[in-house]
Image (cartoon, rainbow, N blue to C red; front, side, top):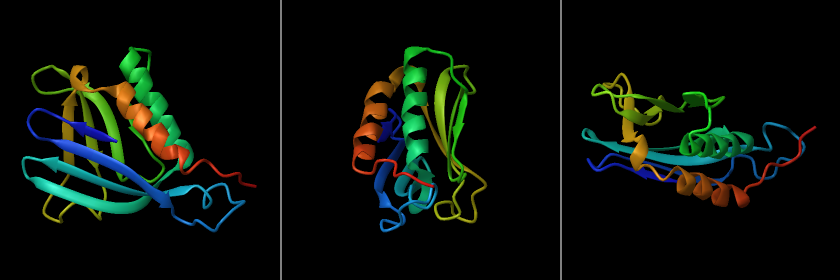
Length: 147
């Protein structure tokens, strides 16, 4: 999944695999995904790899992106059980509708920064394409049954 803006800001997310590939039968441990993500803004680029999403959460993110794309009613914020990454539809300081992606990860944020985020104008994001990219990635790592 890749989001880019005209000012060079970028957010990328890639599913690398299951955190515990041999674990089966545990609702959570069987389905934690190892996620590589990077964020680029005017201050630099930061990358991290962390088991911070469940398979079900990635599927829910794709549905949320579809709702944003279609104008269907949706929550303005999408967050995960592990709070490393957060998506927020809001208005920027000039009143434009934007998708803001926050990184709250201790692995990605330098100690000197309070928060790290990038934003994308809503009308410039191919939400359907981004959601489909997530679904294609998730096909390789489907949700595994738990007890």
